[in-house]
Amino acid sequence: MPKREDYLTWDEYFMGVAILSAYRSKDPNTQVGACIVNDRNHIMSVGYNGLPMGCSDDEYPWERDGDSFNTKYPYVCHAELNAILNNAGASLEGCRIYVALFPCNECAKAIIQSGIRKVVYLSDKYASSASTRASKRMFDSAGVEYTQLKLDRKNLIINFDEKSI
Image (cartoon, rainbow, N blue to C red; front, side):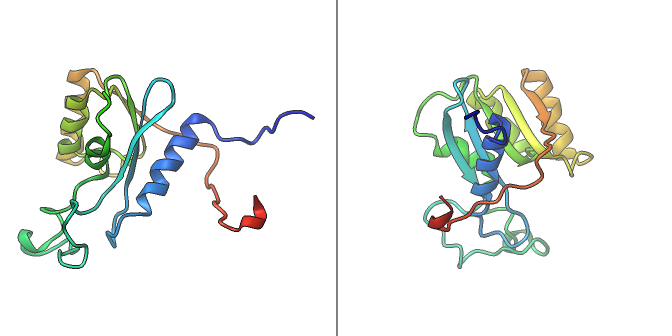
């Protein structure tokens, strides 16, 4: 019997882990996940956008507009930073990070400082923003490669029905 031909590529697999991680986010507007992988294709860490540990999702604002103090922006930790901070202490030097959305300038700083050498992303919908332009400028200076992932597979269905296994 020949092997299965429709298995996931490494890029599909790791981006799928990043997307699955995004489903943990409580943010009502934007859910982003991240997956950090080493050169041996071992997952080093995952993260999603959410509040820091110990900060209740029910006690902090999720609004996008209004007085800055009463919006989500000063409180939410982005997926990329969460993945870097969630790492169990192993070096991230030379790793790559898979994210659904191109990293902001603050996450770009953390990516560079952690030693991650490649960013693989799906969407660059904020490409013209100052934050994204600053990220690309820093990545270019620091030698961090960034690649938009183009996939033939448009969806992946996860079935929790034990009878389907």
